[in-house]
Image 1: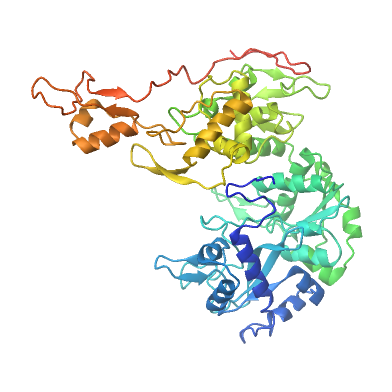
Image 2: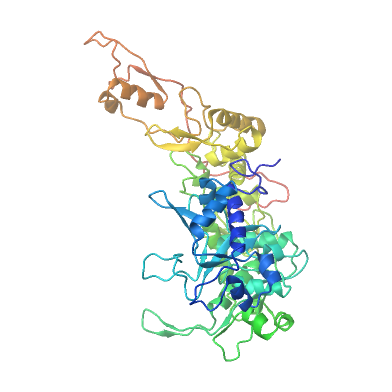
Length: 589
């Protein structure tokens, strides 16, 4: 079985938090007929959903629910009865823990709208406030005077939460059929009820990091065309910092749709902008149109405009978006990169990996495409840009494209452990790193996951400075180092874990001998051994005793193993390998 996660699960297996969340969302769905407060216009949550124009069949299919005012104790008891422990309940995001150890429900007195996966399983949710807000509703509030947030999602950013937010509506996409993209979750539900496959970012546009997933999903289902139908709203006005009145020509919904459509078009998707009518109204959304005017979108889709022809299209937006994606993917200086004796992979710049001069303009070293030959350039901010692919590269994403791990037209996005390993291996084989460059810890874990018996569990280690970190168990660490040599014929650049070595450890800072002299015997021995040094007693002329001495002569200590000499962190240039069919023009100055 292919294992993709650090805890040994495959991607198809839910996490403990996801399991608890699914049970909790089904519990919310069972509360639809609870009475709402008298001040709320509707008698029950089910009545509210009916007023939105949604049938019982849609309500049941979407597993729409409600979090009552007394959710806390009742939902907690339900989850415990279903076998979920405290950690799993916290990992679901449905509860949070306070400093005193008590748990409180994330949502009380709110409508709950789940996200379903392709198998129809609830895997995420957003909640909506009642009107007026329920007295027990504290979602998004920081004080008594604050109003609850109109919409409130599960806080995936909290460390204990192990659920992730998917793209809403993926369960409705059908292979080979066009897809709508609309602004809000209510708009998407209305489209689903009318029979249209529809996705939603549940805001004005998809976040940069979600666009890659969107393209992957569209490719997986061979979607031939995407229609973006956002809210039609009257543009607002504002006063700038010079007291000048500004009148934007387009609302945020239209601008968000165009941004998403531009990105999709850059990646080969036929993306078109559909405009909803707004006869004298401030705003019309897709939900309004389908509920009040017509459940037939044929006129809207027939008049949809290719994004390149839309008046809000910005030709320079593609380059800016590509550069932003490359900068977001850059791992330089992050904790994953390490420092000091860490891998120089993270110190490489775009000139190192391309072998090109700063002023280069010509064919792509990743493979020439098209007729013109001056489309690949190096930018001043340490990136490269392909004007045909509308793709920007930093050193790491260029390596991944050069290694065949990512398509040159789509090089950016979060880098997983296996890709980090591939980049390090490729950089070593291309002569960009010295032979004993140490493998990054995340890359080593990828090796341990796939080539050893490691079960995904990490153990705590201590550095020489007393800091602790989670790393590979000793046996898994050593097996992974062996696998680097056996599978890739490369030096892993790390010593095997022995009696005095910490596996997967960060380099330990040196200690001046004078400082060791100031410590007592036990402290001297402990600090010295953490740095790979044995203390041996010697007889000093003054005392004739066997007390260890740490004078400037260095007598009384010996390295427990001979350290490997290191050369420079970077090879300044690389020879062209002359691969057939590959273009490696120019040379770095």
